[in-house]
Structures are given as structure tokens and as C-alpha cells.
Length: 570
Image (tube, rainbow, N blue to C red; front, side):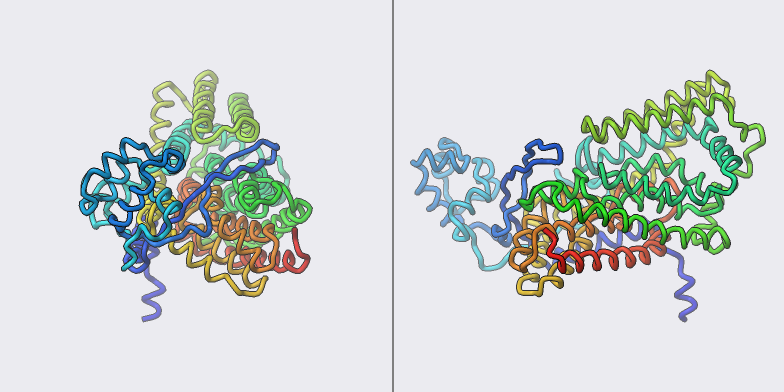
């Protein structure tokens, strides 16, 4: 029987995500929905510029209840002739007068909303008396439905996840980025420049190619530490996967040296504007403080992580067939074996294309760090990369490239990553089933956040910090946006660190390590799924390798927190 279990096929990524969606849906039947009020805080970023961010108020949690409309009518009537109070609550007097003329017994939540009366304003002014507190409510998705027909249904999670967000974020923006990048690299790979460059490197490196992996690990870790590199790893992986396999390793090593390295850098960053800077600003401590601790931490953790990778990599180099992705890597090995000697020739056109790729990558890094470029701009830059590479291939007659071949290659590249793009939407559906990440909207996720915060009270300092770290790691399985996680958790975790007798700097440390390390594992990370799609690795297969590395990361994180508590990091 045990043998039969071990021979079971690894579930498809789609099947795993569907199972998580159903589990999240069941949780919403068991956990009442809750909500927070929010407020704006200001802080200075690492450039000294004042920023504003909306965060939840720690002490404002309340369960989701029906309104006691009689009490609401009485309270609203009391302030109906108080212009200052109405203005403070953002209520128009005319709309309120019209509402008060109707029977409060027939009022609905929509009636209050139509009159410009928000739950946050009512709660702030009148407290819990506005609710019928006989029983907290659950916010559970229907089996089927849409926004216009009955409300969100769990079996519509794919579509709803895909259309969530906008051009600058998950899921619409990420899906569009993945498709554009896929098409652009379809053209680039068709030119043969990448393959020719790989062979040229191998032929001239004279046995030093193994030193390239740790060096590249540090480079990608630096990218994660300085500008929060994540989605940017997808196009890099398109080059690194065939390169690393050509060196005798596997696609797992390629993903590790790119995406995992970037998230290691993000987890122990001293300056990332999308994680540690925002978390410190929300926690009310100076942005970029603690650098003297974090900078050595980044170097040591990156070096140890690179060493972990090399132990695995060398094992695969000596015994390639022992890799769990040996069969799927056959696609890349076959492509290299089919490359003719003529195609291996490193021509002038190939060199120009690689130089152009490098120039665009420098342009992207400059744009992200200096001009605030994000998903729309990055997608446009990669399209330029693919287009110029295609035109160069036509001019230099590389691999018989024509205009029609350019178009067909773009289409083929899009097709290769279409399945990955769908996973991004499916993963977003998990968060939607839990009620979304809006602190002001009733959701089971808000209640979970509140429960965890309450459970930390009264625990010894180090154990409290460790629970924060564990919680941030688990929370990242649902909310993968570093800035979003900071906005949701830091307003609770920062004051809790005061109660525990540890500095808020340690609460930020627990947040950034939990948010960073787990990004290399969670199946709801759009960037990770994008990189895995490029490498032709199923998430479940990736998890078999990465779960051990996550244990190594968690051990390092625990030691770092222990040291931080012992030295009183401030």
C-alpha cells in the first residue's frame, strides 16, 4: 500500500490551486468575517521624499454584523443639523434628510451607501451601538455567480482572478506582462543569439563556469535587496535556464540562481523600497535604520544560500539523472543537441543582439530605480528588446528570420506562457475566496489577522518575535504583495512588539523575512509561477525541492531573530 502511495502522480499546479481554493472557501464557513477601519500615515522613503500610505487601525477590528437600523436612525437624526459633524463624516445633508424621511425598518446597507454613509464613519462616531451584535456574520462566496449575477461564486475564481487589479498590478497587469515578455523572448530565442552565446561562453570559460553560479546568485540577490526584483526575473530565467542546463545542471538550479536569489535579497534587504522601507515607515521608525545590522546579514545569508544551492547543483552535475526535473529538462537538452555547428557559430548579429539585450536590461534597472517604472513600462521595454532583436536578425540573416517569422515567433512565445498567465489569475482567486485584502471590507482574512495579533499578547519576547515571523511567513501564502502585506500586518505587529518589550525594528525584520523567503515557495506568487513556467517546472515538483530550502531559510531567520533580540536591535 505504501508503495502505491509513493507512486501516485504529482498533482498538476491547477489541481493544487483548486484544492487550496476549496479549502479557503470552507474556512469562510467556519471563521466569521471581520473588518478594520483605515487611516493615512505619512513617512519618508529612502530618498527622503514624504510618502502617504493607507493602513488599518489596530484597535478598530470588529466582526461583521447586521446594522441595528433603529439605533442608526436615532444616531443620524441626532447629528442631522450639525454641519461640522456631517462634514467630518463625509455625509451630504440633503442625502441624509432624504434617507431620514423613509422607514428605517426597510433600510439596507445599500441605502446607507447610496446616501454616502460608510461603515467606518458610523463606527468611528457611534461605536458598536450601531450593530445588531446577536451573531457575527460570515462572508462566504456562492457556488456560482458573478459580480452582476448573484455575487462572486467560488467556481468563477479563474475569471474573477484574471480580471482583478489593473494595468499596474495583479492580476491583469502581471498576466499582460507575462504574455508580452513571452512573445518578445520567443523572437529572441528564434534568432539563435542566446544559444550561440551560451556555447561561446562554455568554449572560452576553461572550467571556470562553476564559479558563475555563486556570482550570479549574489547579483540577483542584490537586485532583490535594492529594488525588490521579482517579476523582472521572468525574462532573465528565459536566458538562464538553457545556460545553466548547458553547464550540466538542471532547471531547478536556474530558478534558484535567479528568482530564489532575488527573494533571498528581498528577505534580508537593508533598502528595498517595496518592503523594508514601507514597513519601517508604517512602524514609525526611521526608514533605512538598522542598516549596520542588515547589510552584514544580507551578505552572510546570501553566501549561505548560494552554498546551499551549490551543494545541490554539484550533486546534479555529477548525477544528472537524479534530478526530479530530468525528464522535463529533456526539452532544453534536445534543443541544444539539435543545434547545428553553423548555429553554434557566434556571429556579429548574435553579438549585437546580446549587447542590445544587455542595454535594455540596464535601461530597465535604471527605470525601476530612478524613474519609478513598473509593469506597463517594463512590458514596453521588453517588447522593444524583442522587436529590435528580430529586426537585427533580419538584417544579418540569422536563422532565416523574416517578418513573418518574427510574428510567428512572438505568437509561439505567447503560447508557451499562456498557461502560466492563467495560473496567476487562479492564484489570485484564493485571495478573493477569502474575502480579498481590503481591510475595510468584511472578510475571513481580516479575522485571521486579528486572531493572530491577539494570540501574541503575554508571550516572552523572543517567542513572540518567532510567532510574528511564522505568521508573516504563513500570511504570505495568501498575500504575496510585499507592500500589501506590510500595510495589513505592520499596524498590528508594530504595537504588539511594544507590548512584548522588543523594538519595532525586530517586528519589521520578522515581516521582511517572512514575506521574502516564502515568496520563493508559495504557489500564489505570480512571479514565481512565471519563472517556473519558463523553466517548464510544475509547482508541485518545485515544492519537493524548495520545501527543504524553506526549512533552511526558516532556521537562518530564527537565528537572526534570536541574535536581534539578544543584542536589542534598534
